[in-house]
Length: 386
Image 1 (tube, rainbow, N blue to C red):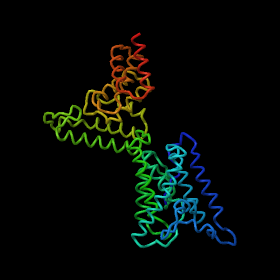
Image 2 (image 1 turned 90 degrees about the horizontal axis):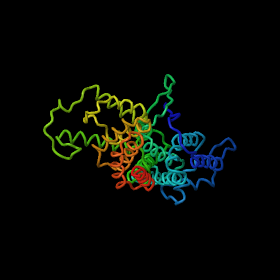
Image 3 (image 1 turned 90 degrees about the vertical axis):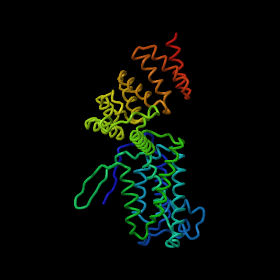
Image 4 (image 1 turned 180 degrees about the horizontal axis):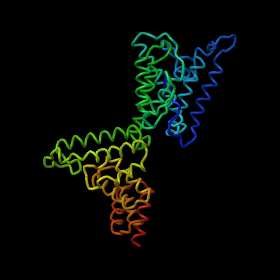
């Protein structure tokens, strides 16, 4: 038996909407369930609010998600909503989170009805419970926080805990094992769960791709982009193509491009620590790499993360070198203006080199779009030229 008991991150803002949804579910459960006379069943007047797949009414696509079939049902659902919903609420905001939660309930209901119709089974069985909406929330958590660590309590012959990255727990255990392999319980709407996960993962990933939702360096979209960068680099090198200049190079032998094992291990450890969010340690390891070996250049986002970390630590010379390397090899990225702004500030304030500072600041001014950054850049140029 496996049960997630905590994550290694906390929301930066109080997740009021998630608390409100948990409260609403508990209150509605108390109102709609009959506990008198030794029986526990849904009150007759509330049964019309369950989802009836054969002939659903519009309101049922929402109301079914606030009804539950017993104490264990609502406790389990609210437990997982609390576990994963707080941080998702933090990223989406209260209004956005409410809309996402309700949309997850609707999409789960639609998915359940469509699959039940195709199979011809379960079409006459009413459905209730928030698990489809919570599956959507859990799918959103997978996309937004795939690299966070979740502590799992396990008990078989022994009891203990183990730490697992969220992406593995949710993908392998909660989606594949619980809803694809172990479909044994007769009263569980597995297809509604899968529809919820599909909606949660797909919709949040789409919002990140189109930049409607701000992304960071540790979400699933960033992981996919880093993987694609590594793939493209390997492909281009294998074809004797220089990915930085865009020109064919001389034929390179395996011996010439293969770094030593120590450097490979060091580079991999840097990327691992970045993925874990331990940037300070990753930056320290980066300084141990052979800096003139361009074959050991980090992926674009990792390179920028390291440079930013060195900047935040006040290691001005190392930060400037990292930013310069980023501009040399990733000049076509979406951040050249911000990088040149940082270089200009470093050279102007901490490594007194007025010529380099003005060179970078003037180039940055042409590329920056953010009004605050443009004003900062303009003010710094004016100060240097006065």
